Image (cartoon, rainbow, N blue to C red; front, side, top):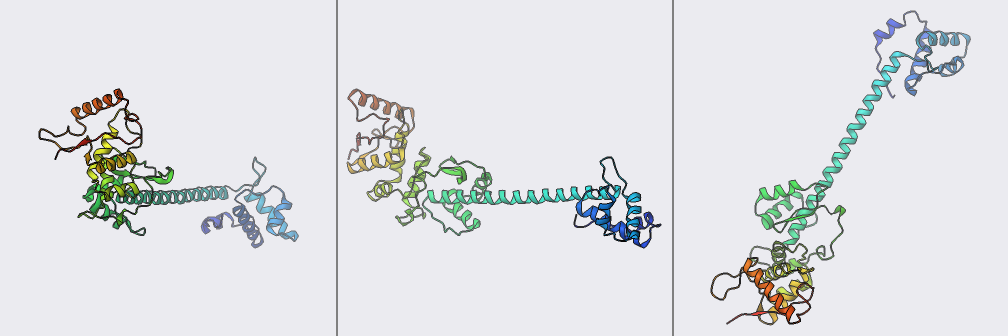
Length: 334
């Protein structure tokens, strides 16, 4: 103990018959008791050393005080009831204070981890639509960018952020990452390539075509995208639209079995079709006598399965489920 509580009235009441030397002996023994937080030894010789008793008068004072105020207990040590009570109270108070400090430390660590996870979520959502914030942007600035370019609603952004904790897992809802914690995840070589798509041509809303293409492809079910992928940028430069890429990736995903790497497959397939002047068989155009079945409809799925069976019967081009580039086109009638 570094201090103890002293009650002068109680002390004087209990020590009225002590001489000046005996008061000194009492204080020296009591200070040793509190300093070590343990009872005194039974041996008078050790007590003389503790109290600094040299003369016979000093030793007599130590002996009198020890026998009256520090009697030997069953454990063979000299105890003081008041000292034991104060030591127990102080130890409980110290333990409680250490517990509060530990709780504050853990709370601060949790708060920092949660903030890092939320920053990661905001950065990745913005990157997926082609917006690259400054690395030193504040949370307020990132939230404002997220509202402007991703959700369009401050309440939606706030709700997404509130769901993110330091233990959150990445989850995709409607093409927008609702929570990210990169601490326990292995980086995806496709989705974590540094984004350079902000150099590409931007749409009127301020979002790059690459970012919009990735967002549409995610909404179509492709959860691994990268707006900086060179093949994606090349496809857009050749005139392939984000909508066409989304349609193409959806086509690959509804196959049985589905394409296992839909992102690169859709890009290359769309580029090949664009070069040949063709359109994907899963265009979402509706209405009109020559229109294709709407993407995801029962008619469209049946048509895709019929085409798959025809290819199988004819030997196919490696099978519809493999990661080969589809050579089948539906030419547009001019």
